[in-house]
Image 1 (cartoon, rainbow, N blue to C red):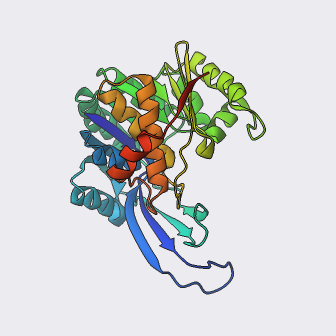
Image 2: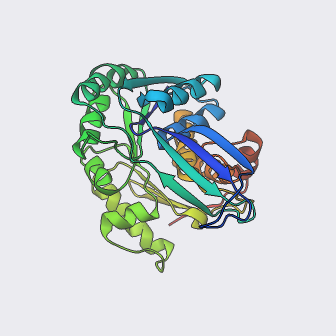
Length: 313
């Protein structure tokens, strides 16, 4: 089994508004409401790929109940630690006529009490990690937790034998490296923040040097998503570059989460690094074809896998 941890889960609402204009009245064409947060997006994709997965983290209030119920309706196992505060809602505004461009409004999230954190660590996380081959920690931290919280959680899960994967950024990513995780999956902005660099004018081979440096800093493996430029992978002397397939992309939200799900799904099946980066790339591209994050159609995923090119760097 794979467990995904979303400490700052959300009820995600996407509004399709043709010709969206600021400072004017806009009429909504369609609304999508989904359980969201990076780990939940990954769980939805893993489930679509028929990988046994449990989504976990914190959930509270009406938004928390929606998250749990929505996953149940999808037949996705979940085990959220219930909290007193309200889980956040996140809003995205997309214009169908401007595919790939959207405006996001992200709430900060709830405050986690020391008792709730202790209950999560001692019971839910510990029990799930003991049953899991991989535990994915994804996204931002809610209030009440600090940068060391990810270290505490990862060490708890690793002690039960699970391989630890991180998809986060900023100080949380720096702290995550201290736990010597099995894999980290930053995007280009997150890697740039880690090394204080801007990669816009830097070629792939130069970026790959910093991917290796991130691995040297503590991670067993690093998978870096580059958006439309593709992805880079490095582990123990192996460096791969995967091209981004051309698809009719409508929404980039969740593509990194889908990539990580596809990548981890291949590892769960015993596939090699090359097959993992192909699977991840295909899942990310298939997600870009949908309006809602964490949505992958299997027929698109399978077709795209055959178009991904991988090169040694």
